[in-house]
Structure formats: structure tokens, C-alpha cells
Length: 186
Image (cartoon, rainbow, N blue to C red; front, side):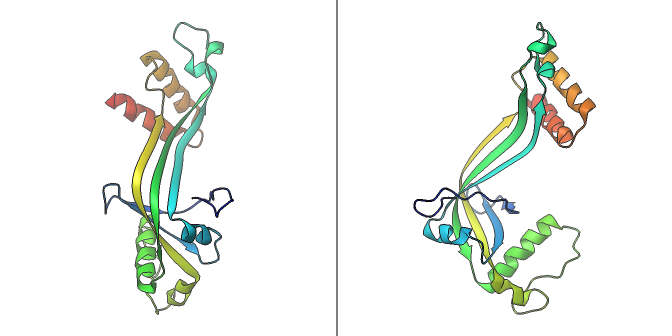
């Protein structure tokens, strides 16, 4: 999001829940502690860019070499999914609305349950609601890029998939699933 006048933008990790409604692009809900330094910037200007990058992996050059080239001529690259949501921020300070927002967010990240329901004025979380603020981001624009070598020849895509399968490092399985799914729909 924009910083205060004369300051750079704020960039911060954020646990959030995306809801496809209301509106044409949906909304994002989140919460932050009341002392978070983002609040003055949000109050000064509600424009927010939420950027999400996932399933990113490094792809060694030999995996990406053209079919007729030696492996060492392949260009190293990355695979990734990147989405940017341009949003208008709405601050949520009403205790009942904050509790509802928290319960929806908790249900998203903890679907198995196990935590008490948040309710304004009720234990165990009611008194803690004053220490945070809710955030509803109205999504006004979506930009996305998915880079998984869809334009490469089938032989190269096969080699890339085999490399990800064999290496099997964190994120490789998700990147492989993206590559195979995008290849199947191309």
C-alpha cells in the first residue's frame, strides 16, 4: 500500500481470506494489531495492492535447453504464480463486525475447528477485540501471471516435469501440478 506522503510503500506479510463476492472481483478480509504502522497509511489513502506469489521454483538451465541444443545451453529460469489484487481498503472497528471477520478468517485457516468463537464482549476473545482492527479490501482489479513454460516444445516440457519430479524439493510438487494442469488446458 502507499506509504504516508514522502514515504515509500508498505510491504508486509499478511494472512488473509479471499471471498469471491461481493462485487465483480470479490473481497479480501484480514486483521492487524491496532499498533501496526500500516494503519496511518491506510487512513491517509485506502488504495492497496495485495501481491501474492506462490509455487515458485528455480529451474536449472539444462532442464530448459531447446531440443536440438546441448544441455549447457539451456537458460536458467523460474516458475511461479503471481497475482496482484488492487483494492480499496475499508477499516473495520465495530466489535461485532471484527468478531465476525475473525471467525470467517479462522474458519478459513483452521477448518478443523478447535478454537473458541470470537464474540464481542464475551470470553475468551471479546476483550481482545479492542487491540486489533479489521480490514476489508474491496478488490477493484486483478492482474496475474503464471509462468510454467507453456510456450516450450513438448520435449522440453517433459524434461522440465521430470526434473521437478526427480528433484522433489519444497514447492516442486505444486509447481509441477501447475505446469501439468496448464499444459493439459493449452
